[in-house]
Length: 167
Image (cartoon, rainbow, N blue to C red; front, side, top):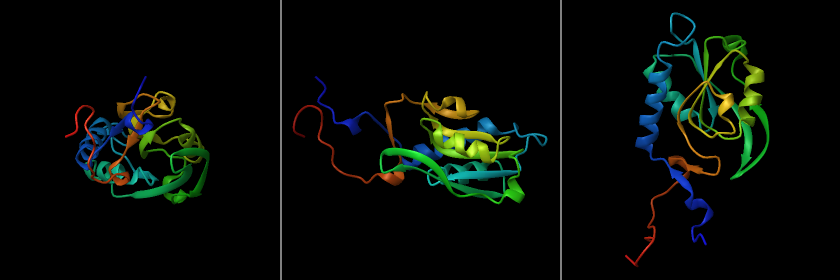
């Protein structure tokens, strides 16, 4: 019998780890844009994609940064994704030369909606789960589908009881 709580099959990401992984994502994307290896713009999927997008944009010297907001979660439960804010379509167009950046692809349903808006964009995520993996061209780390990723903006420091013993 498993004594672990559901949240204990988790992958806890610190701010330092997110920064390292987002920089690794930028390194993988360096030189792969369509304009002599450069990218025209970054579109972050809010909210989780904002921190990685900022780091990628900085590392790749991309000055045009926008957001697309897709609501697909209600706390830890997925709902039908819907766009609630689009980027400046005069700038991003069909997505040619545009990087779409998110923290994680889970089922891929959010990215399906985003891809309909910018079908020629390059999608990059820091973390990927197998079910959503086909929606992403570039990622850094794959985790199992049943793993919950705890991002630094979702956590606070607190005491955790050891698996064995009392202290």
